[in-house]
Each structure stands twice: as structure tokens, then as C-alpha cells.
Length: 255
Image (cartoon, rainbow, N blue to C red; front, side, top):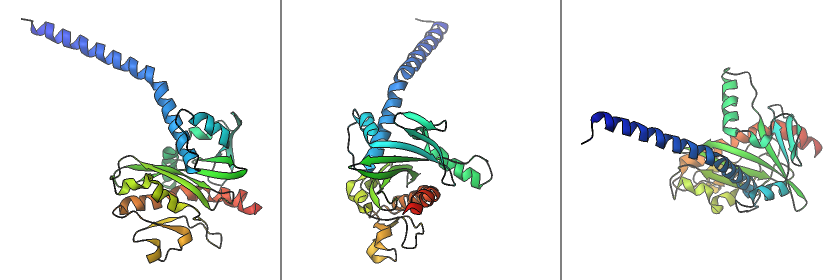
């Protein structure tokens, strides 16, 4: 029969040993976890422009197609540039910007809680001799965060592709945002109207054909996934509007 003191000491030692082992394992695996997150981000960016690649080849393929990473401020100025494997302007690599945090800064700035201006990452791709612009997205669905990327043709108006994903949307309903069927609806839609005004792209409950939304600026919502569909609409507006000053200053002025 063991004494209470022995049992308490034994249990304490075991807790400390297990905690130390788990902590060590976490530290050893952290670089691999970070690399996997980075490669998944590479895949998402490339997928929006319809470049499908395995996780193992994601890094090399990203370097092959993405010729520039830019960080844009709220006035449309380029404050950071990463190209050809090196930092050419600014002190932060645009790829490392966490969009979720910048959206929070944007909201805090509106509420007067911070004087810092958010930065918006932009990826420029060269594919088949054509330039494409890829914007990362982050929003809120029914049960949690949703995110993705949207690629534009060289006019920075016409969508060439999208990739959406989610954390916990309902299978068969809101979770359908990460299906090819839904994402293909966005192809060739435009975010500026004929007058050059930013209108984004709306995900329409009941279908675009039964609404007042012009087909060029709308896609059909997912049946039974209204809140997630609305989340996609809000995500597009909330993210894309941040690039309008840059598009107006750098793309439309050269048309």
C-alpha cells in the first residue's frame, strides 16, 4: 500500500514529465506546422488563379507564377514590395501580413481606437503571358470564419477565379462555398459597374435571375445556406473595397 505522500509525489512528477515532453514535441514540430500553414496559403493563392498544385510543390510553383507581392495602404500607395526572392521596398513581406488582423485594425481605426493604418496584401501573377491580381479574403460565416482568394484579369475588374474555404460551415449547405460549382459562378463577374463605380459581387438569395442585381455583378446563393452566402457577400465588399484606391490610381488611370 502506497502512502498518500508517495501517490501525490508520483503524480506530480508524472505531470511535470508529460508536460515537458509535450512542450518539447510542440517546439520541435512548430517549424513543420508553420511550413504547412505557409504551403497551404501558397496553394490557396494559386488555386484562385486556377493553378492546382500539391502541397509538396506549392513553394516552387508559387515562386514560378507570383512575380510580385505588394502591401497597399488605404490611399492606394505601395508601401512594401517583395519580388524576385527579395524585399525591394518597406520592411514587411506582404505575404506575412495577417489579413484578419488588418481588418481588425481597420475597424479599430474607424472607432478611433488606433491611429495605425491597415496594410492590404496583393499578389501579382504572370501566367501564359497574362497578368492577374490576387486578393486574399477573410470574413464570417454562420458558425465561424470563412476565407479565400479572388483573382482578377489584367483589367483588375473581371474575375478569373476564386477559392473559398471555411472552418465549420454546415456540410451540404454553407460548406458548399468551397466547391467548384459555387466558385465557378464568379468567373467573368465584375466588381465595377459601367460608370466605374465599385459595386462588388453579391451572392443573391433566390437567384440573380429573380433579383434586381445585374448578372455581371451577382451569383446565385447556396440553397439553405443563406447566412453563409451573405457572409461571402459581406466578405467580398469588406475586403475588395480596400483596394479601390490602388485600382483607381494604378490600373484605371492607365486604361
